[in-house]
Length: 236
Length: 239
Ligand SMILES: Nc1ncnc2c1ncn2[C@@H]1O[C@H](COP(=O)(O)OP(=O)(O)OP(=O)(O)O)[C@@H](O)[C@H]1O
Ligand SMILES: [Mg+2]
Image (tube, rainbow over all chains, first blue to last red):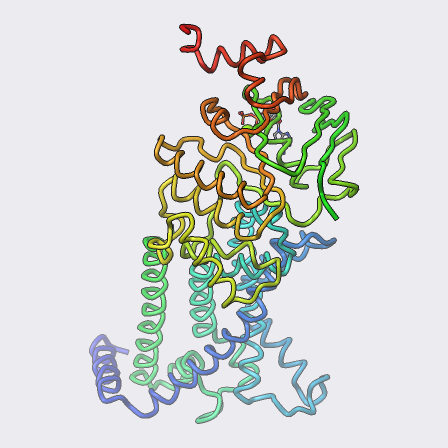
């Protein structure tokens, strides 16, 4: 394609965004819903799990921490395949009929973000724990009270971790493609649409979605940055 | 069941071969303020941590009343108290969490306690931004709020200016008046004379003297104590 063609595609993409194109909005919204829900569920599992890894004393703790760290960078296609096998007709959860639904995408992304949340939470909480361990012991905190208090103490750093998880979930393509199937008006999210439209040659829509995705990621990072700064000025 | 008298006999603490406490004998009654004195490295902070159940002695005997394990009702304020990244009021209320007190009640008691230590107007500020003196008062409030029977204070006024130290001493006296036994360390001998009922003088991981405060300063029995008092109070030579 010529430079002029790309330029035209860009300006068409911008006018799609400016006009709040229905299709673009619908796809962006689904992305946000799927990834937002996945991260919300993922943080409820990952953050306490990471904190327990930091505070707890049990056999296998070291191994679990290494696993969480390793799974942080799990390739999303691998997660997609595993969840696909679990949800497919012949799989153990096949009867639920979840394959190729938004729910399947949420499940895959939960699997994707939990290790990330747990690994970051473990690191952050462990640093804080080193500082507080003796105070908490003197106050006779049990481990549950310690975990809860530490999660509270680290809430701003952890919020930043959550935003990182949201960024990862929204920009991955492998897992949602495999378990969602990229079905029009049903499981089509930003990343899968971009892949599809580009291969179909519908560049304006692909570019428009790409720009929206980048804008959202930048927004998340900006938010993370300001929250961290605000908290540091307020509490440290 | 009372945790007093607390009695230690032949107490040893020898972490990886380095003898910190080597045969410490001490009996503490349930009243008044015991001030632990002694040179740097004598083992004062280690003794307080053992009394709080934070360190386990390597040998000897330790009893709180008839109990062998550190009982409930012991609180400790460290030399460098650590505060949560949260408001002053949240930190004051922290010690009530393990006692199973509900959140609303925690906050209410913490408010009342902040009034007593003169920090009520700072309640909503960040605890980590308090001055050294304010932070120490907050730490005292946090410990006091749990109504301990035994309160251990490790150099509560180290690095405070005289007026800051004065405020902390006032609070310590008030806690004592409520019937809480206090065991504290200090390097400020003036403070020891102002606060102490009895002095525990430690050197080389042992208790060398345990006598009423007046007696300790008037007639120190051991040579070490005499040298210690002179070293810390050189101006006394002139009298
Ligand atoms: N948790 C611990 N484990 C092992 N050794 C320790 C521990 N805490 C302190 N020590 C050692 O015990 C010795 C006595 O320390 P301690 O802090 O009790 O002295 P101190 O009397 O409080 O001195 P200072 O007046 O300087 O505070 C030191 O040599 C120190 O290194
Ligand atoms: Mg000390």
